[in-house]
Image (tube, rainbow, N blue to C red; front, side):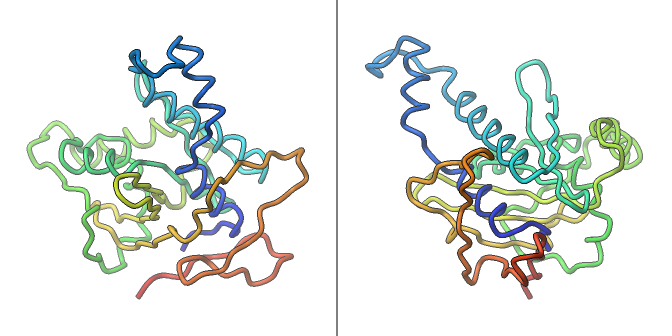
Amino acid sequence: MINLHNDIVKAIVNILVMDDPEARLLYLQSINNVSGEGTQNSSPKQKWDYRYNSLIEMAKKYELRYFKLDRGKLWEAVLIAGPQNELYVFFSHKNMKNVIKKGKNNHYLKLLNLFNHELDELKPIYSQMTLPISFEDDDDSSEDLIEQAREMLSMMEEEPSKVYVFAFDHSFVTTVKAFAYNTRQEVVWERDLTELIEPNYRLVLTDDEIYPDTRISNNTPETKKEKKQIVSLKNIK
């Protein structure tokens, strides 16, 4: 279902969970807290900026488009566009849970899922990641929400063909999964990508002329031909 080369999927997975000690040290130095005894109020944002900026570098390397989505004065999210104009959005498992518990109908993830018309024909699967719809938000009709979604992505020349979510978890065991929702916010596709995680992964920039090798597993897409740079992940039945 996801139209990305194995190397790109692998890079995304590892960027979401990688820990760079050098970047961490530089951050602690910048806030005068090398000892770790002081405050680190900006730490969560620093980690997300590191992920987002690494995703931007990855997108440049593989010649993918990326967009910065303004979510208020204090936050910018990064979206990656695939070769078929599909969008990929990134969340932590904790943030996804907050969206499930507290997210309004006009949360940007729910708005993005409104572009998944083609997935409405797929049968929903049981998932703890299903997003509830609040019927108390009378001010937000379906037409209003669709218009909000279009305005939010006004930087794109065309509406996205589909939207997919990468979610990672750092709680007990590190995991990364990909999800697809229908316009009713129900999960219709899910894939565990945890086996793609590599220890001590480092992002390889374009001018390094070194490319990550491809690992094939039950949880990852298979490459049809090396010449063909785009492959599809099949639906889980």
